[in-house]
Amino acid sequence: MTHRLWLIFAQTATVLLAAFFVVSTLKPEWLSDTVSSPQVVELKQATASPSGEARFSGSFRDAVNRAQPAVVNIFTSKLVKTPRHPLMDDPMFRHFFGDQFGENSQRSSSLGSGVIVSSSGYILTNHHVVEAADEIEVAFANGKKMRARTVGSDPETDLAVLQVQGGNLSAITLGNDGGLRVGDVVLAIGNPFGVGQTVTMGIVSALGRSHLGINTFENFIQTDAAINPGNSGGALIDANGDLVGINTAIYSRSGGSLGIGFAIPVSSAKQVMEQIISSGSVTRGWIGVEAQEISADLAESFKLKSAEGALIAGVVRGGPADTAGIKPGDILLSVEGRNVGDPSAMLNLISALKPGKPARLRLLRNQKEIEFSVEVGRRPASTRQNRPG
Image (tube, rainbow, N blue to C red; front, side):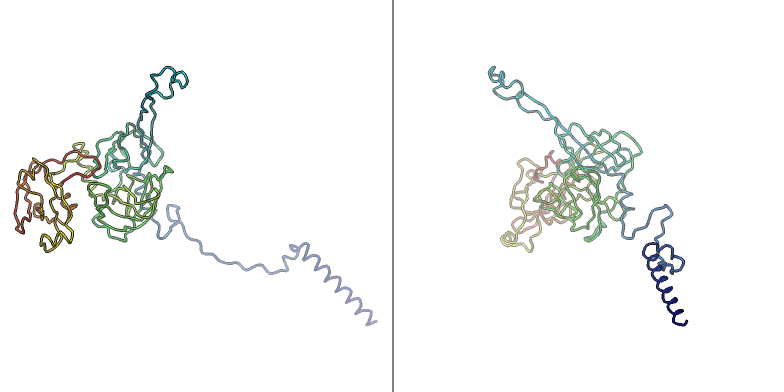
């Protein structure tokens, strides 16, 4: 009897185990009440800001949001005429080829960027962006497009001022480039390759870059923020969103960014812009000299204590310097009491003089310092090529 009970128990247990195996394999949800619930992992979710936007540390979104509406895309076009083929007067030539080789006109287009500097519609950009254009269209960040006119331009600094009709525009805040230091974060905003408004980030790589042969007057901010064709005339802003420079050129062998870009400081751009708005052009001082940098060998031959100053290599006949008695071989040491470090510094100092007013120049001749009073003339109109001071 006992043996029979054990046999029944063993068979029952086997059946129950088999049933449990089948159910756990095919219908595991039937056993949910008997299986312990999975452990809940608590996750900490970032809280949204009052405006509903998430907060990201290290983001420059506020700076971009401040400046971006003031940066515009500029589209220019000009009419280009193809000359008439000389054989068009031959009836046989015209019989076979028709008028396809006759005088033809077509439009060439280019693109760039600009910065709204006044709510009344003034836009600062590069001279080479709008040079020779007969049609200029400005596209705003909100997609709106307007025709613009050229107020004036300055080829020697590669700056131009445009104006659109339509008040209450979003103007950028002008910053202080004098407070910039190498290593400061800067952002470039523009329209590279025509893809649309783009923001790139970098740092200030160097200050006061000159002797590059880009413009007559050079005092560039160098940055590694990516600047490509189409960025010209766009904004270089600081971490607060204030304008510190106008992007104007890149160093490149391929046409693309290699991490060396140049921007015109906003202080220089402001001076040029104010003159263009008030008079349509920029007036600079001129005395009619050509200067040469003093090398170590020249300093030794002239028995100079240092290589500072500018060697007068040529004097324009009948010009202010010639009239005052300045001669080739003289060394210019100071202009109105401000020391001349090199020809570039000389050019900047002389251009800042007011035409029609006398200026005191201190020169070295035959190892003796001499002072001259020169009546400053007006610097002749120039293209982007360098001219004498």
